[in-house]
Amino acid sequence: MTRSMTSFGRARSEEGNEKVFSVEMKSVNHRYLDISIRMPKWMLPLEEKIRNQISSKLNRGKVDIFINLKSYSKSNNAVQLDKELAKNYYNCLEEMADMLGIENDITVAKLSRFPDVISVVEKEEDLEETYKEIEILIDKSLNLMLEMREREGNKLKEDILAKLNIIEHSVLDIEKIADTIPEVYKQKLEERIKVLTDGSEVDQTRLAMEVAMFADKATIDEEIIRLKSHLIQMRSTLSLNESIGRKLDFIVQEMNREANTIASKSSSIEITNIVIEIKNIIEKIREQIQNIE
Image (tube, rainbow, N blue to C red):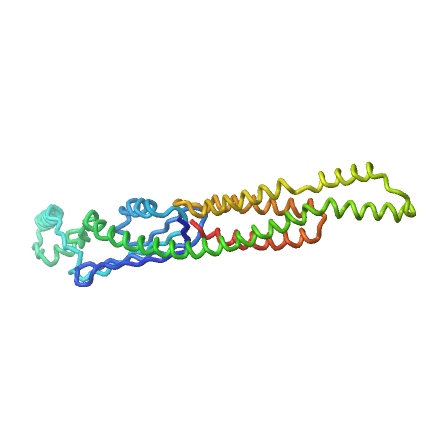
């Protein structure tokens, strides 16, 4: 299945809960799977689980995940009394009063002002319960992304297949022209020899040898066969139900290589012009498959 790497997904927990989570994901093309997660600091221990959940469904792409929280519950902060420390402060003050012979005017209010006697601490969140809730939202977002990737991927596949058909027809045109090149070369060579020798009879054996040498040097049969084979491979790969982007990229490189070789070996301006059009289409395909997973 051909899937694009450009996608977006969003999910949100139901309103009315004490905590409302929202998960938003977006991805663009990338050579590998690159996951970036932004979420509240206290949720950082869940990062590995979230990464594993995403990588189980996505193979490539730069994926940005934003996890936000709106809390409608009472404050998560709690006031904590250090009883032992308070006792130690009090005992020290009592000892100081006895030692100096002064009145001990300590009160609870004054004692509470000493460092760390009373402190405000943040309640620990239940990470397992939190993950159970956001796991569902991540799955929903991922499914939306996959649907979008498949829709975009199908559009890319249809367009690439149409381009492959154009290339195939162009290759057939090249093949027809290539079959006539030796005969055309023979005629031109024979005419040129007659001009240079003032119309003398041409040695047909020597002429045949020259044409054979030219045909052997300029033949592009192998390149045409390989280019046709690459077209078959492209169509076959586009129908696979797996990550195909890198394989398609390799095949396109090989197609471009064969087109360059055909252009360099051919002496026909017609073939050269056709190859230019083929290379232009190949480049468009190459740009498209950069966005295929």
